[in-house]
Amino acid sequence: MSMNNSLPVAIIGAGPVGLAAAAHLKIRNQPFILFESGSSVASNILSWKHISVFSPWRYNIDKAARQLLNETHWQAPDDEGLPSGAELYNQYFKPLADLPEIKTRIHLESKVLAVGRKNMDKMKTWGREKVPYSIQVLHADKIEQYEAKAIIDASGTWSSPNPIGSGGSYAVGEIENSKQIFYGIPDILNHHTKLYKNKSVVVVGSGHSSINAILELDKLKEKYPSTEIHWVLRKKNVSDVYGGQEDDSLEARGALGIKIEQLINDDRVNVYTPFQIQQIINKEDKLTIIGLQDGNKFALPWIDEIISNTGSRPDFSFLREVRLSIDPSLESVAEIAELIDPNIHSCGTVRPHGEKELRHPDKDFYIVGSKSYGRAPTFLMATGYEQVRSIVAAIDGDMEAARNIELDLPETGVCSSDGGGAACCGVQLKPKEKTNASCCL
Ligand SMILES: Cc1cc2nc3c(=O)[nH]c(=O)nc-3n(C[C@H](O)[C@H](O)[C@H](O)COP(=O)(O)OP(=O)(O)OC[C@H]3O[C@@H](n4cnc5c(N)ncnc54)[C@H](O)[C@@H]3O)c2cc1C
Image 1 (cartoon, rainbow, N blue to C red):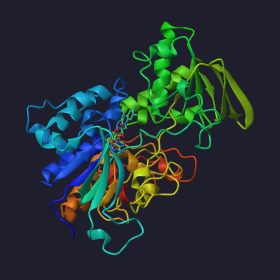
Image 2: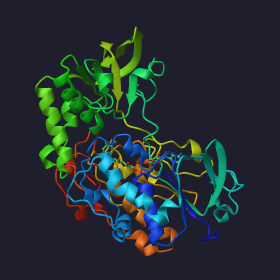
Image 3: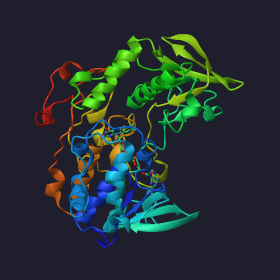
Image 4: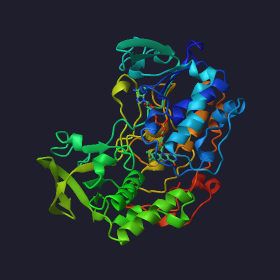
């Protein structure tokens, strides 16, 4: 590297991938500093701590982190177990963040507000690579300034949920009625029961979070039979969300699809598809959702609460001074867009990639983790662990290790597609066979 090597690498965000980056940097003896806006590490995952993930422990623990934890009295969880968000935190993220060599480098309640080259705006090119990064951080009402030789942005997308409006913008009336909209994953069976019992609830979205919400609302309905469940999807057919079911190599993910199909067949959920939400009207706290169903004007009245699970999007606002290379449609890192584009395939698995594919025009700057996928929803923690392993190797000058990508991801068992590309997806390829295929990766 061309600049002062004693400067730290700055990591933004202490989610699973930011923490894994810290572990890799520690093992390679690279100085680092980690800024986390929340009051604890893994704060996004803690917001859905009651939910169980579908990938077993062996995919959820980064190798460098495991190596560091194995040097302590840490009890490794059972490789095949499926942890909840709370268990992920208690048994992995917290012990990792509490390691003395990591803990002292983490700054909690420290939100990164701006990143750029020191004293050099985005337009200046000459000598740019030799200038350190400068980072502005909001901590306890004060803005602090730090310098770094490289940046790893692992800030995720969870804090910028998509609106429910069909065009990607807010529906008319959405902002005004946001107190009746929960963006994220409420704890329906415990903490938030009061909000939903015996109410008319609409779930918007077609991913696993929506399916989870509907399954929990159905459990609530068993106890509180006046609870009404409505499900609004943009997809053409509800069967498109059933997934790989028995063919999914993550059994728990497949099981979600099986359960939801059962509920629909038993008529326990009112499904509206394809539905495009345009407007929300409020009369005495009862909402009417107005939109197009199958192209025709449609109104869904007498709604008390909306749960929105329409995905999330990256926040680039604090990267205004960084020269980025972002895909114009997915908002992912440009180079990996074709590997993950849901318009082409929905396989959920992705060709192994690392430092080379994650570069930006500004050298030594990387976006990793779920933010690297932009708006694409298929990110798995294991993908992020391999990204940061490769990037940290490159920062350490070990280009051979950086290039040598190894990623073993579970298959979804479904390679359906709305657009082209489906034809070649009928065959299940083993991860090792996939490097040259053009879809189903
Ligand atoms: C219900 C559910 C189930 C899931 N199941 C699985 C599963 O089975 N397997 C799997 O692999 N993945 C699963 N995922 C996905 C997985 O949780 C995410 O991919 C993962 O959390 C992404 O990690 P990340 O480190 O990139 O980002 P995040 O976990 O989002 O972490 C980002 C961190 O950055 C912080 N931050 C944000 N902005 C700033 C800022 N400006 N300054 C400082 N800090 C900031 C946030 O507070 C947060 O702590 C699931 C997700 C959900 C919602």
